[in-house]
Image 1 (cartoon, rainbow, N blue to C red):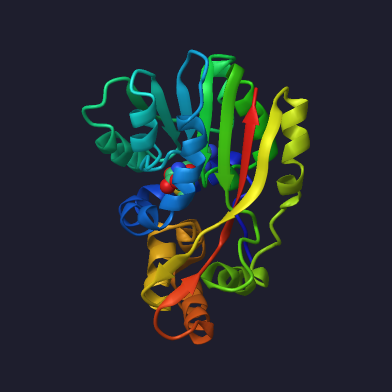
Image 2: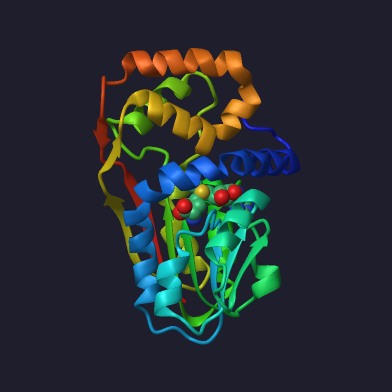
Length: 268
Ligand SMILES: C[S@@+](CC[C@H](N)C(=O)[O-])C[C@H]1O[C@@H](n2cnc3c(N)ncnc32)[C@H](O)[C@@H]1O
């Protein structure tokens, strides 16, 4: 039995490599399916009156947050930050021709040393749950935002559904890796308050998602999604057995489900 590497540098290197490899399929398969969550997370920043300063987008991946942010804040600097150089390359393509948009390779676990009290806002979608200590990262992000600024953070909780492909994967992996430490998910409100911000929303957002069949979903999540890192770590034999079990238990033909993401909005 394994798990993610103990060493923080190794873990970071594994994630960077996994998302480098995943980038093209992630953009093609998951970005369209994640659109409603991205739109909700961005809308609360896009529609807000913000203080001066840039909008930071930690864990931007291929940067699907960018178009709506750009439309609503055309004169503001928008900075995407991601660990994976390949994701950053895709994000820069999305930003081509847009002035005042930058995308940098960087570790989003600590942004404060570089951006203390300067940002107008933060939007982050589906990155927080991948960070080694999400609660500390969130506190750090609050420290980058000016008074009056706003944070909108969407992430996958460890249990995003009770039925559907994410639930089935969670069930199959439960016996194969140590249980994730998910206590942080329930204390984000207090973390935000302690860091000097006010929670405006803390809720789950559920949208429908569709997959042509289980095999297509499997290829997408292992080649272009969050299981890419597991696949690199555990190798072909392990993944082949897991795939077979997954397909045996999955419904035949199209798969429709409605996962929920956790969303937190705070005002500094
Ligand atoms: C699921 S993708 C989400 C991308 C995008 N925000 C979206 O909504 O489609 C997660 C991204 O988080 C990035 N990531 C993971 N750990 C990170 C870290 N420590 N610092 C910066 N980015 C990180 C990955 O490289 C990946 O691009």
